[in-house]
Image (cartoon, rainbow, N blue to C red; front, side):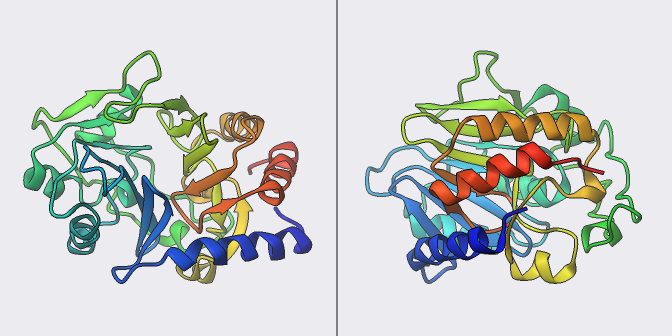
Length: 273
């Protein structure tokens, strides 16, 4: 958790980033990276809209938010559909619109093989733990029996060499703990990290923190995390990258030296449960 001083500095940087807010609620971070908060979870858009190149959607939002996601994508990319969807993991707040978007765009979906059973409906995650620190997510079912893709043939395994299809210069990192096949996305050239739920920038332990996106560096959501030892190891892996810009699936984007110091402290002290 960040100190009060660090939190003030983080909020200052986050406010600067949010000056990139567009009419549709999308936050533009870099020329080829933007994100949009859909209820309680972020989706990210990779691709330069001015270059008329292929683009990629990272995660697919909370159930019921497809119209908002489509609007943001259309505004950014002029109506062009993405080349693919990459999933950080398959919890329902990350795959809620997956089936509808695949039907709309007819595109492949890439995920870690350990997440495939949860994407295609062969397995289901455990129910949220109501005793794990309270919070909005501990009381939610999150539509745990959602079957995002069933058996429609669009699901693909991520390349074993760590590369990401249609995302040159990026690689995926296995960051398990929150789920067995959780991944984060990393670009070395500008030290940009898309952390998924391995690292949060807002607390998930209260309804206020979830809905208002109050800035705070945290580990993964307690009610939904499967393996705390591996979650702590994943945090240490991410901290060791020394990122310049971090976008989590929950909370605001943060960047800079203050963020790195806070991340190092979190990784060093994180005990999970």
